[in-house]
View 1: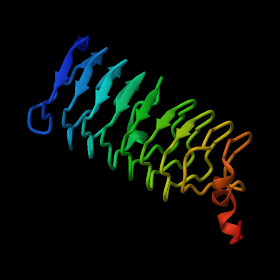
View 2: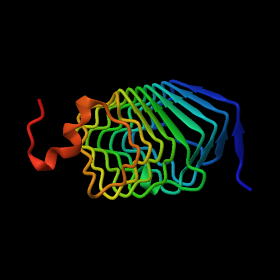
View 3: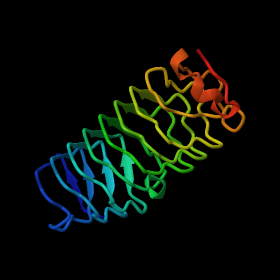
Length: 189
């Protein structure tokens, strides 16, 4: 049986240099840590919190994130689509997720708060009831995605084609309307 570390706090550790223990983590807090390029494959994080951490270019093969909060983290170019999808539940606050992929994941009710989501891959992602609050979605790709009841009212720079995505009861502001009709080359004043 795999060892479990429960209720510990890790501060200002560079796991890019120092090896990261291949155990499971429950109720742990990681603050100011660098995981840049670290291999976090086959590790389970349950009810953990990452604050001001750099996880850019980390490897997530079969990694489990269950009820995990990311706050003010740098998460560039990550393949969340390689995570273990079972009970996957994450929340992102003030994070930089540019160039990351959530391809084909079920992320119902996920929350992105004040995040940079530039060129993020949401292809075939289930984002039912997702909340995108004050996010930059420049170049994010929504294709065959489920955005039913998703809330994008305070976000900007998104393009969602209603013909190739499910958008029933999706909430947008009037300022976001151009992102729904951009392929028609209309001028909205």
